[in-house]
Length: 152
Image (cartoon, rainbow, N blue to C red; front, top):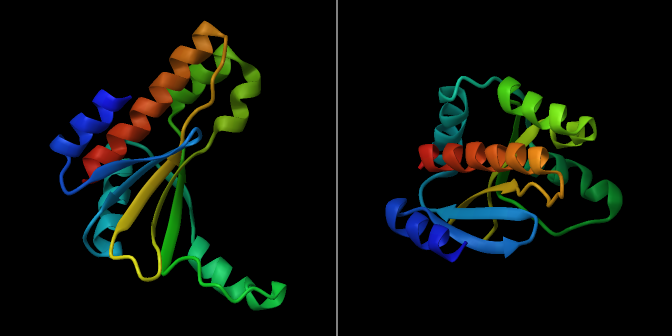
């Protein structure tokens, strides 16, 4: 993993990967939210994938915050793109029909108040002992990582 992070930091400047946690792959870059968001959308569509839905998470939190007594602004801007790959999703579900919960794939792009970076993140597929599913999940992660790299 350290070799991957180092290679990405060199090859994808100003993009840099950040260690987030066991379930998140997180990258940060500079630029405007709109430029990074558009590049991410084009990278997804450039792989021949259709974005099924765009979730406006920042708007939803801003809208619902007062209703739940929340005053903290979590994001300046933030969206998620939902999409699937017919080929990789089929491999994944043929390996384990219960892997349906992994679809659709989601890549997030967001900015945080008082932070000049733009972040891109996706969920890291979880561990499994099923060798066929492990291979399919590696393909999912490669796809998501390639999309982020293409966006940068």
